[in-house]
Image (cartoon, rainbow, N blue to C red; front, side, top):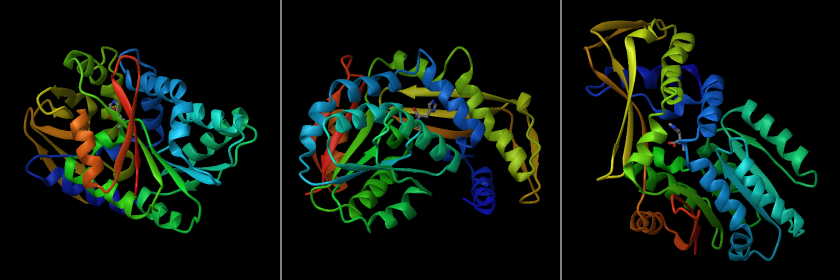
Length: 314
Ligand code: AVJ
């Protein structure tokens, strides 16, 4: 991503009638560290749930892949790879021939992941790619082996329904018949459990959101004052949407050098920063179907908080 794209997106988002900033901009070097802290919070259940799924059900997942020749495991937005490692470890133990292909936007994240994976799994064949999903997906078309695609951590929850259809449809169009997708969905559950995961008492999620303003100040020459903004997050159990916002605490103007413009905020005006959608099983089935997949199985943790759903393109 160039600074120009960032400036254009922020300019557009802050001039809109309902202000918004894409959650993809959370993940600069500082934001990625804060997200690591989120994953360690007791309230943030998705990480341990998915870890459990990939530990407990890995034999079953491997069996359902039904690959009989060397294959690639292509992971989108790989993160620290702790969860994925559970699956890879089992494959190596079983002497299955595969290559792990993590894709991430951050070179730093990829370097750390690669070092980490190799130290834990010395025999692992790994071929990292740095870039965004879409351009890398193009490159993947060159691979001639079957593929298991991983899109874990409920990253899909950040996309609206039409965006999710579009993204998964794009994945599908770059996959071959018989390729599989293992995709993580956070499930609808007791609303209080979900609310607490996104509005933690220590303010770590707040810091994660506030970092957006610091990033804009640093990279786009902004003069946001973080004491004049607050954080608000809301779960709507009727539609399964967590929506997170920054709130302007007073009428104020903010200037960005990169666009040479001023942006006005009313008192209590919101900047929408994130959607974290929680799914029902019928929504998951629907999403698989409309994006060209057949659902093979939903693997779950014992509390049924989360599912890694295995899909095939046939
Ligand atoms: C990385 C997108 C899965 O939505 O749960 C965590 C990011 N935001 N707490 C999520 C996040 C606030 C996370 N994902």
